[in-house]
Length: 206
Image 1 (cartoon, rainbow, N blue to C red):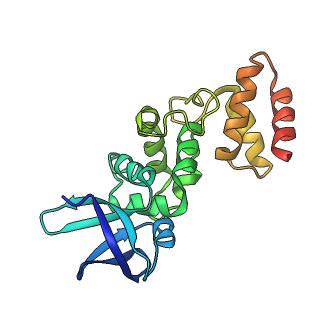
Image 2: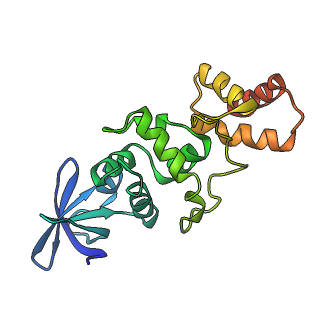
Image 3: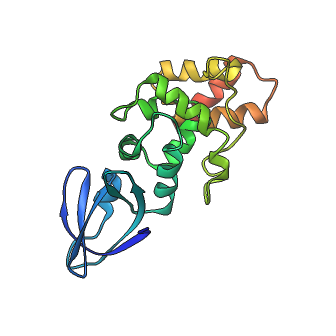
């Protein structure tokens, strides 16, 4: 198995690059974030690799950071999320944003990726909520309070859902508002919807 390549990135396409290691060219599929971050000749690039072995091919998937590789492995544990879909998700959202989206129950962060509809986005959130805290280097990162509670259908429930929905109606993204709302509700558990909404707007306006 190949875990890392160090060489010259001699060619970059939309979703992959060619890494020249001592005269041998390796085709590496990667997210747009990784492709943009890789060094170009004459500088040497280091690419973390996840090797996927199939009956008809051996594929190399490259990552600029360990966090992105961890998320790739985590996403592909979800039924319906293959390597290509996982890369599409990582191309539109960075690891920190994905963590917040899972905690907040924000499907939009996933449906922006090609091949991900609302049902698959909901499945990703539901299956990964219990797993993200166990990811190396990410436990607790980007989280300022308890997970947003989910109703039977997988949507965020209760007062928190009402506040988040109201903020979404005002143009704020759920992954952006959830940490603020979650912390405010933890600090003032007896606050009403109007009070939480007013305080959240004051903080978000800053």
